[in-house]
Length: 194
Image (cartoon, rainbow, N blue to C red):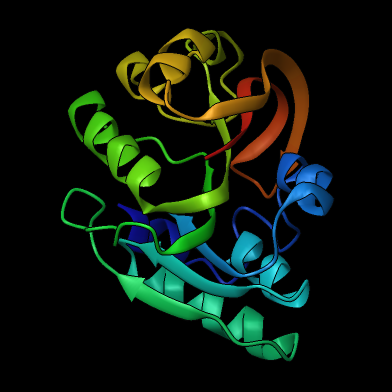
């Protein structure tokens, strides 16, 4: 499905960084950043432009090829890894920042992945996450059609209970990110540190 979606000539989620990630950039410690479900690379490239050493992980080789093309067009370098997140192992204590922007996977995979995120952060490292909430199903402006793949602040507070939440909220906001995320969206946003 994702290879097919990303085969479009356009960047289907745009080339600009996610608004929430951009809004918290100045709070993030410079260093190594891991971008989960990074697709066509907009967030990874943005971080690279701002001095981070970035690894973009996604299950779509087509998306990651576009990510590399975007990085090259902006004269920055990112590393990419094509792997299903169900199989990806995050090395403990190795990341200054982990970014999870609209990374919607089934709950059984998500819980294990989020445990790895916590372990993968260095002390003082930060998690940046934005995802759709169950309320998004009413808006139909992007995101998974399956409520089980959405997230709530309460669930994330439980899954990341060993992190310090600097920011955590659910809200409805304009999400204008390419043709698949356009319009009002019900989202949860968190910024948390280890």
